[in-house]
View 1 (cartoon, rainbow, N blue to C red):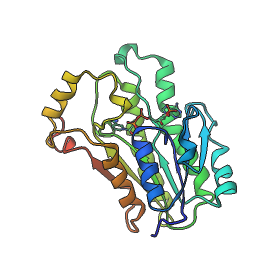
View 2: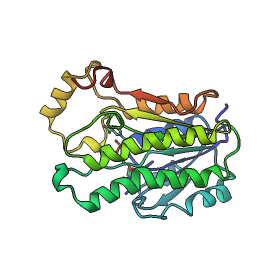
View 3: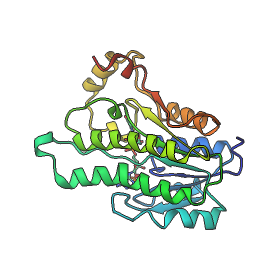
View 4: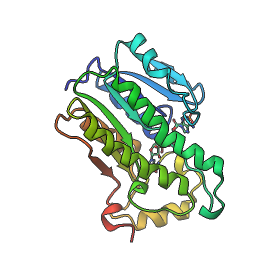
Length: 236
Ligand SMILES: NC(=O)c1ccc[n+]([C@@H]2O[C@H](COP(=O)([O-])OP(=O)(O)OC[C@H]3O[C@@H](n4cnc5c(N)ncnc54)[C@H](OP(=O)(O)O)[C@@H]3O)[C@@H](O)[C@H]2O)c1
């Protein structure tokens, strides 16, 4: 479809992968609403900005109707906002567990259900997963469980809402954003050395996959993995 004039919502559109996707959608002529937790200087780029913590239940309920009212509809929803809380699984804090599941499963589910009420046939919902949707990772059990759940949500909604709504996902591998801020340079070099592509993704790599998916017409319930080959070798 031509994306010109289409209305998109990107959660977590303030930084990193979300910001790259906002820029890519704007370059295609979309009107773009975003969420973030604080007021960044992004309203310059985005057409609407919702400062909202998506880990708070029902916090997201008002967003979609306001977008429809202000921007004239909703055609694309990108459930991108995500965060990692570190800790060993046997001592994982309950608040971090709850935050992970609310932010990366419940909020996407509620936003998707809200958006479906207004989306015309041919609309797209894209969930941003992770390679941790397909394999374990140490010290981030809430994140791994939430990302596996978001894969399940993608498949469940895809078959229930086809053919009108295309529900698909992108699974990024390690991508240079603030999410990797705590990683030492040595750790980064090691991880790159065991990645077939020999590098991390850029946020723009993930945005490229988004533009492909939202232009597609016959893809339902699929995941595009953009990970420099990480999953192809199962991390071994
Ligand atoms: N970077 C990677 O290596 C990687 C790999 C695989 C998957 N991913 C996934 O890609 C997505 C984007 O990650 P990123 O790397 O771009 O991370 P990032 O740079 O840390 O950005 C995270 C975004 O999510 C928003 N966010 C975080 N917690 C939130 C909350 N409780 N409520 C509302 N918004 C919240 C942030 O908003 P504020 O700006 O307001 O904080 C920010 O816009 C996430 O779903 C992540 O899991 C990333």
